[in-house]
Length: 371
DNA sequence: TCGTGAGCCGAAGCAGTCAC
DNA sequence: GTGACTGCTTCGGCTCACGA
Image 1 (spheres, rainbow, N blue to C red):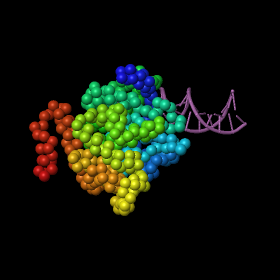
Image 2: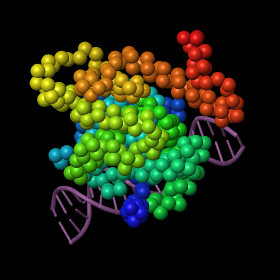
Image 3: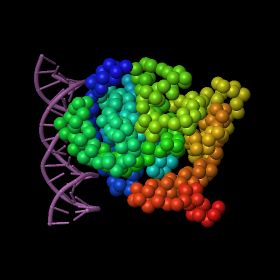
């Protein structure tokens, strides 16, 4: 086992790729809004795989560097000889919702997870293009700093990569400043959350999409029962705040939902319809009036809230999930937002040595006017 | 005022493809 | 086989905004 670890360690090659180039993220307060709009433009608002050349043509017109989104955030696969960019959970989130901090976290996760697939002219190391970022977050931010991101600086990142034998490049400064900027606008500090929030649920689906597609490139397939191990080996849990009983239970429920919806096929209305008809030939096909996404919540834990396409509602119910309307999702999101902001404010007070003498629940009760 | 770092820009170099 | 061309990566100089 130790030998295997050292073999992987020694064979791993970290290259900066185009990450030494700048992307024009805009103001810090904008988060990853530029990436959000680029995904929408590149996919032309359609939730289906798009040829890489077509995606690039669309982005070029906007005057952006297209390599950062397609080589670091999205997933590539050559299908029938054509390089394609795959529609997956990250694309679903970008196309389904306006830009929000939740999108930023899913996007930052996609970057840190660093599974972007293959295209014809890609070098071998480009399949995992940001392993340096992945390792920095796992080995420093999570393990050493315990998600206290005060120590995350460009100097710290530069120090980390340039002293690591896996890093093979002439320079490290530009990469370090760019990564530091990205980690802060993507709010990496929130990755240490212990409870399975909505962004974490979306990241789990994204991780499964990427891991399964990545395996398919090598002609490997996995059984549903192997998904949990697949996630564990990918260090998904370490990258998203660690594992606990609540997350373990949530993972079991979410894998069942992911499988019930058909994996990445859940994003195709036709594929979902075929799946329903296959399982229930008497099923009456009904078009949905409201095209907005629905929320699938698990009966045992309403915190497990997964946004799904409206045509997936019946499959989600079959998997033991309750399906709520987009408006109900907004209400839940607002409540989660208030709670999150309150927790952040208390964390700041705590950091400054100011000890509040009431709990979050008591504080929320007052701010909600005693409701 | 000064230092830092994002953003812009372009040059250099490598690898693959294609025409001759 | 060779050279031109293309696509892409890598690097770094420069400008400008911002905060101390």
